[in-house]
Amino acid sequence: MELGRYWWWPVVLVLVHFGMNGCFGCWEQERIALLQYKASTVNYTDEYHSTPWGSADKESDCCEWKGVKCSLTTGRVIKLALNSTIYWSGESGGGWYFNASLFLPFEDLQYLDLSWNYIPGWVPNEGFKRFSALSKLELLHLDGNSFNNSILSSLSGIASLKELYLGSNNLNGSIPIQDFERFSLLSKLEVLHLDYNNFNNSVLQYFSGIASLKQLDLSYNNLNGSIHIQEFKAFSNMEELYLNANEIKDFVTTNDSNILSKLQLLDLSETKISIRILESSAAFPSLRTLYLTYNNLKGSFTTKVFDGWYVLNPIPHNCAKMPEYNRPNRE
Image 1 (cartoon, helix red, strand yellow):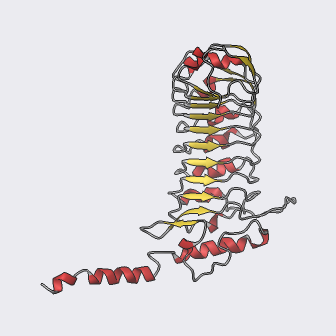
Image 2: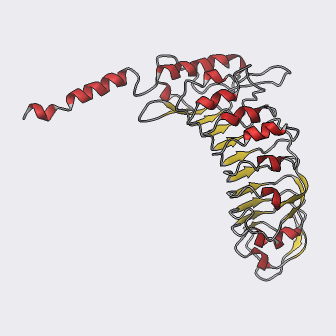
Image 3: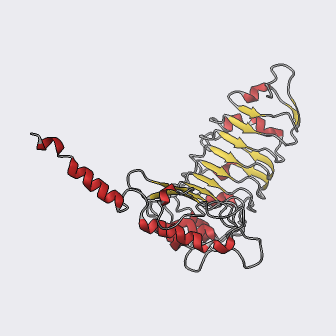
C-alpha cells in the first residue's frame, strides 16, 4: 500500500527528463532557425530596426525571447512577431530578400508578422510557395514591404490562411488573370487587406473567387467612377468592406437584398460618393455602420434613411442638410 502511494514519482522523473532535453521549452531546431534569421539580417539593421532578442544566444530559451510565443503544451513556436526588424535605405537592388527556408522549421507556426521590413522580393526558389508545408499558418502580416504582383500566386499554396495583410506594397491592377485564379485557392481566407496599393476597379472581379471573405480592405487605391453592387455578388459572407480614400463617385445598388446581405460595416469616407447612397438602405439589410466623413454630399434627406444604421459624422466636412429636428448626436 505504501508503495502505491508513490506510483507517480516515475512519471515526474520522465517529465523532468524530457523537459531538460527540450521537449518542454525551446526546441533546438527552432532556436537555431531564429538565430539564422538574426544572422541573415545583420547587415540590414540600424538603431531602430533589429531582431528583438539582440543579446540572445544558442544557450537561452527562445520561448522567452521578445516576439516569440510558444505552445504551452508542445513547446513549439506558434507565433513570430518580426515586424520592423529590417532596415533598407531604398537603394536600387538592395534590401533583405525573403528566404522561406529560414521559417520551415517552425512546423506549428500559426502567426507570422513580417510587416514594415521593406522586403523587395525573395531568394530564387525560396518564395512563399514553400509555405505550403506550414499547414497551421493562419495569419500572415506582409504589409509595409515592397512586394510586387508576383506575390499573389506565390501565396496561393498556403491553404490554411485565414488572415492576410498586404497593405502598403507595390501591387497594381495589371495582374495576369491566372495569378488571381491561383490566389482564389485560399478557400479559408476571411480577412484580406490590400490598402495603400494601386489597384483599379478590375480587382473586384478577381477576388470574387474567395467566397469565404468576411473583411476586405481596398482603401487608398485607385478605384474610381461607379461601383456596382453586382460586383460583390460572390461575396456572400462579407461583413466589413472598406472602400474609403478612392475616387468612387457612386455605389450603384439593386433591390436584390441577397447581395452583401451580411454586410455590417461599409466605409465610403474620403470618396466622391453622392447622397444617393443614403437611399440604399434596402440593399444592405444587415448594415449597422456607414462611414461618410470627408465627402462632398449635397442635398437634403430625412432621418428615416438612418433607421437601423449608425452613420459616422454624416454632416462634418459635407454639404448635405439634415432636418433640424431629430438631429443625431455628433459626439
